[in-house]
Amino acid sequence: MISKFQKNFSVVKASRLWWLMLITTSILVLAFGASLIYFMVKRWVFSDYWGHLDLYTLFNQYGKIIYPPLYYWTYDLLDKVLWYKFDYLLSTILILSFSIFFKYLLTFRYILNPKGNYSFFTYLIPLGLLLFFPIYLFDFEGEYQYLGKFTSSIWHNCTSTFVWPLCILLFYFTIRWIRNDGNKHYFLLWILGVLICLAKPSFLFAYIPSLPIILLVQRAEKKKLLNALALVFGLLLLIFGAKLMVYNFGNMDAVIVPGAEKNKVIIDFFGVWNHYLENPFLDVLSSFAFLFYVLLVYWKFLVTSVEFRFSLLLTLVGLAVFFVLAESGYRYADMNFYWQVPLTLYILYMVILKIIIDEMVLHPGNSTEKIKLKILGILFLAHVASGIHYIVNYLMSGYYF
Image (cartoon, rainbow, N blue to C red; front, side, top):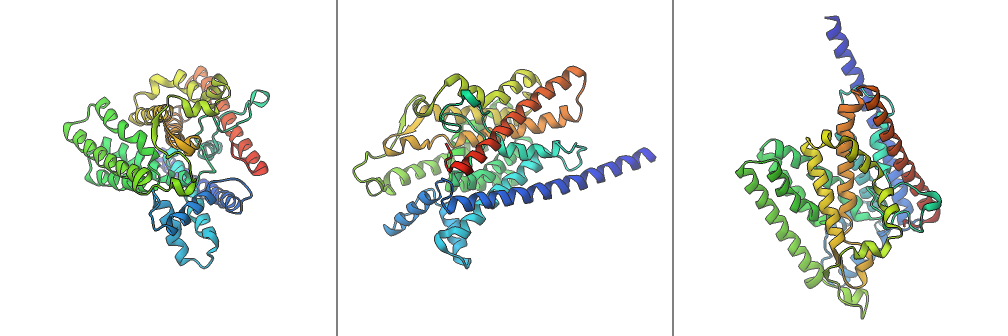
């Protein structure tokens, strides 16, 4: 009776601490996000906010719909009900800061169980993931800290910030659907897929090929595979429609950059990456030091999880898309086939951290396992410290690259 009481008391205590840490860190994230977005819209640091606003204004002047439209429609609609309307400043701050906030809430809830008996520092891991960045190389660092590398956090790109929570939700409910064949989850996949396509379809470039593959790997039943193919086909039609809007019916290249070559999708192996690449070995190593160590040490343990398999597959497909596809014309250097890489990498790291915390941190095992965990912790902290360094440099210099 006493042990049962102690166990229940321990669960209640853990739950209260979970909520306390969630609320406290979420307030910090919201304050940070709102401040950062404010700096962006005030032009104190560089972002693509004003570029998107200029494009939206231009498309409206010519009576055309900018695509994908959801980000623009959202801050335009919110602006209509707000009292402060200078260049959508308040509506943008609210939308993007709450996007960062919801991204963090989803991350915290996914990684940490409300009933888990965690240490104080474990509660800070979701916050660390938000700051996770390629390791800073000091004297070996080139001109770019961001460009040419592969990061799971991006701050200057408004549409990526906006779509991030939707991508996490799509991954989460896809896993739920794979494990439990519920019509509710399948319906949510359609809704989220359509919203992502209307907001920023980059994540779907990785999701569409990966979904049927993971079902085949999992040896899913025929009905589920057919439903997945129906979803994939529907999303492909939406993306094809988006392509027509961007490159044909809604094309404004001649107005945006008079005399410029018309943009189109091309195959260009490693072309865009090579455009910014400084040192292949160091750029890859600094980007994936944590991931390489995890795959080397914990592969046999992680690969049994469908979440890990799917997130790793998403990341590999996302990287393949970036390495193969590009845009010709003046948008070549914009890396518009790169954005799925941070989105998928973030989800992969989120999954890895959840599994390792559940199995290794709470049950560390022998001394060898504890040493492995300490090395992993050091690498994680190195990535997080580099992310803090990047943000400080971004705020001080104003430049994101």
